[in-house]
Amino acid sequence: MKKLKKLINKILTTVVIVIISALVYLSTNSFNEDYQPKDKYKEADYVREYCSGEIEHVLQDRTRVDCLTDEYAIEFDYAKKWAESIGQSLYYAKMTGKKPAVAIIMTSMKDEKYIERIKKTDENITIFEIKSKDFVN
Image (cartoon, rainbow, N blue to C red; front, side):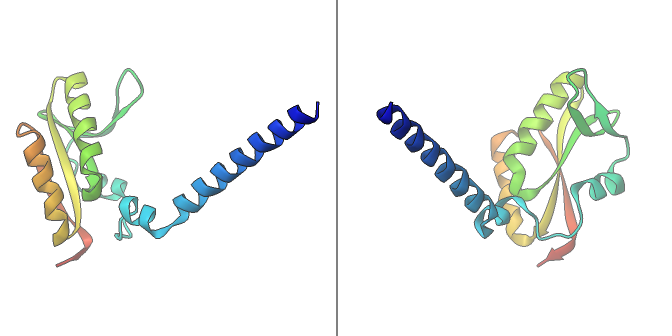
């Protein structure tokens, strides 16, 4: 019985340590820099401003195309999320019969490298470059 209690305590201690470590990691600047744009505007603000089609078109599986036009299924994302935007755009295009496109929101000239990565990954994805309202040269 004592051995079982010790084992349970070890497991619980390990779980608590993992959870605390994850929370600390998620709150660090390095995580936030990768996923939180320096732009004070949200992705949805750019969708509303630049989409000339249907905003938030809902597919059968309940996923949402940011902007669906007569020609394109467009995924809007900040440049640092370039890889995610490619996958979403290709999926939405397949599901709608439209051409894949990404609208990449750039917060600085440094974001140009992400545009190049998209071009290298799939030359059939149309790229719309958007300079954020807080764009820095």
